[in-house]
Length: 434
Image 1 (cartoon, one colour):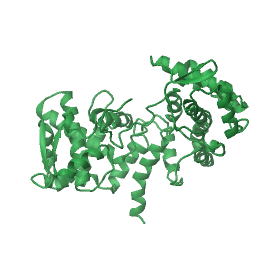
Image 2 (cartoon, helix red, strand yellow):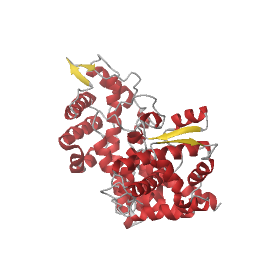
Image 3 (tube, one colour):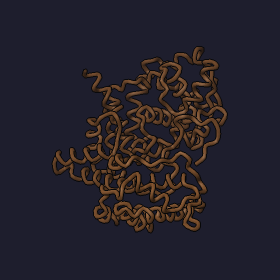
Image 4 (cartoon, one colour):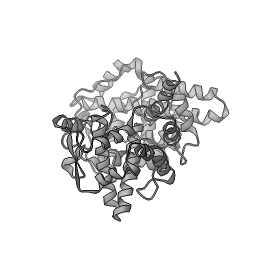
């Protein structure tokens, strides 16, 4: 998906380019262990903004008796209010829209709050902001109603008990002053003038430190998956295990280790261990395959045999760690995710495991053509008289070092988001008890 102008550094959606149709398969296996989060919904304070935005938008709607469009507009304005106060008062830069917010506040501590495109903090705040990216995870977590853009009773009670109570203590009874800011078409926010007390009160809702009540609620909804958890408790178990892994990052070796730890926990953890094993199996296939396709996009005009020789030089005669028999056992699940391309993927697995790199290259070209045809688009590459004709070039592509293939993890399975949220919820608790 192309972005238009003034792209924010945090606005890019991970996985938006998927020329081999791999998102369907890694999402299928990832949802067995992380049922609610997405690749971008990885900020606890992002969910705080979402909860408050919906809450105050509802309050304004109830006062005015207006419909759904006013809910959206008020939400966008609250997202702006939260962003400006977080940067100006808290010096916090960890939110979507930071580039535009910093630029505008750099001119003067006076900014416009409005749903108009020229006042939005992202090129399209509805799509690339919290409304577009966090609402579905919030709904899946039980924070939003399934069929309406309103908070669930439990989420509304949490907002009132935690955040509205804080506003009351700061002198802003029921947060009515916030509702007043959001109800108009436009509000000029004077951060060093008449809105200074309000700005400090709003910023106070976004302190880095989560208190005990916040930790308990966010742990329930975000780390454990909430009342609607679709993973049968596996997400809660995984969240616990992730807190003990090294901070350097995730790879397949780490996921293998998590599976071993789960097995050691006993029978109740076997389901999680098996799901993690399946992730290792499928990623051992699709990660190197995606890397090979990138290489193809940088090999305009070369023959299949030449690129196959590159693969053999870098990766050896075959990928010995790729267990085709285990992937074939997963054939039905792969088919459930990928439909009629599942057989092609098993053929790619056999080609990589057996060192038949020429067949792998041809199959990947076929896969891209099938995926793009289903999207009513043109293939990125095709074979013409045995040579690659590349239409979408990747100039800087390189093969992963063969020694690193066994640990190669390219797709998130949403585990990294769960890890980040679990750490945010728990690290503060550890510091407070230090």
